[in-house]
Image (tube, rainbow, N blue to C red; front, top):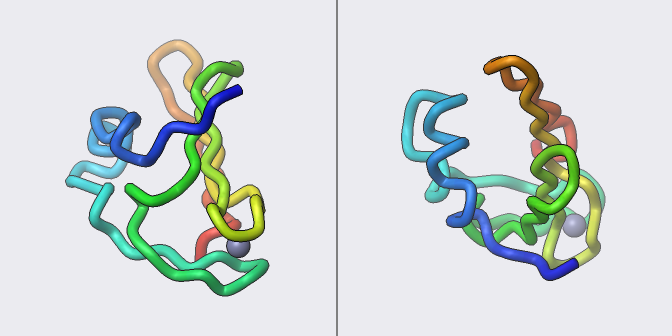
Length: 78
Ligand SMILES: [Zn+2]
């Protein structure tokens, strides 16, 4: 599966968080890499959206949608 970047899910992120999120800062809990959400390796081909660290591939963000509601797990992001 080919990784996209965070810009690919900008609309979904804005719907969920209520503001533009691709320029928001993040820090990886595993390797400490910092950057903007737009820099995440994003996968959209599964049942949800997955964001991984570009340096260590740690799972940083998982978003799933069911019946119009999103479940967000961002525990990989400090
Ligand atoms: Zn990392």
